[in-house]
Image (cartoon, helix red, strand yellow):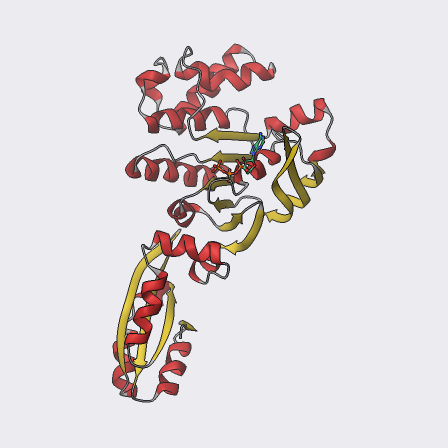
Amino acid sequence: MIQFQNIHKTYLVKGQAITALHPCQLSIPRGQIYGLIGHSGAGKSTLLRLINRLETPSGGQLWVDGVDVTQLDAAGLRQFRQGVGMIFQHFNLLSSQTVADNIAMPLRLAGQHSAKEIEAKVAQLLRRVGLEDHAKKYPAQLSGGQKQRVGIARALSTDPKILLCDEATSALDPETTQQVLDLLLEINQELKLTLVLITHEMEVVRKVADRVAVMDKGHIVEEGPVAQVFLHPQHPTTRRFVYEAEQLDEQALIEDFSKVEGQVYRLTFQGEATYQPLLAQIAKETQADFTLLSGRIDRIKSTPYGQLLVAFHGGNAQQVLEKLQQADVTLEAMN
Ligand SMILES: Nc1ncnc2c1ncn2[C@@H]1O[C@H](COP(=O)(O)OP(=O)(O)OP(=O)(O)O)[C@@H](O)[C@H]1O
């Protein structure tokens, strides 16, 4: 468990104070994949880098499995950092070293393992990330996705409990992004690691994260399980992310509401209800008509969901709402 208690961070730039992170409370449960999403400058990197103390907080406490990391001395911090791996957007590999040497580097720096142990560990990590045949290559000979696999193997070399991912897929194409996200999911499930990943892409959070915090101007403006936050966004920043990702024009939608007859609702279906022909059934049973304004069926991690904007008119309106609620559909009135 990672817990932020009133942690904040202000940088001094040419005598001017820039608050990158206002005092925040945050709990990241052990073993989960936790997404931090926000636009550029929101404070994501600062928050992430506070976890392994690459940044020193200006105040507050940071607890990791019961230890206040802000109080560690140099030796304690060195030890603590062995338990926290990190991967980067631009991979940060040493270009003059082979793949195997890049992966071995943290173990060599720790100075606690024999050459034979390091060799065996590197071979095991190469297998885990699917790069057995690339041990002797140099980073320049690899694709972006392969470079990130090396980065992941290197981050896992000290058997960390926490893996910090700083825009780990932002430099990759969509197909490679999916492969790297699949690898991160596998690592989370098999090694029971806690993953904290920062991104400005909602799709990344949607595909892999269990919980998400939305950041804006150094504040955490919304936090919770991914389905809750993205299917029922409360804060304008979260709503903007959702609308951008779904390529919806919020203003145009509101204009559409005035053109249709009846009351407009957003219906959210989750799990099996997503695949039921519910609307047609209810229309038949209640004699109500409905107009579809927009719709989407997708998945959050492995859970299917559907969201529809629907205007109901005519028939027995009360009965329509009751039947939808009975079917566990979440209803939000939009006009
Ligand atoms: N080392 C630093 N010195 C001074 N100011 C900094 C430093 N690092 C970050 N900042 C400032 O703190 C604020 C938050 O930056 P941060 O990098 O944490 O945001 P971010 O959400 O990760 O953005 P991006 O996605 O662009 O990296 C910004 O105003 C940034 O300019």
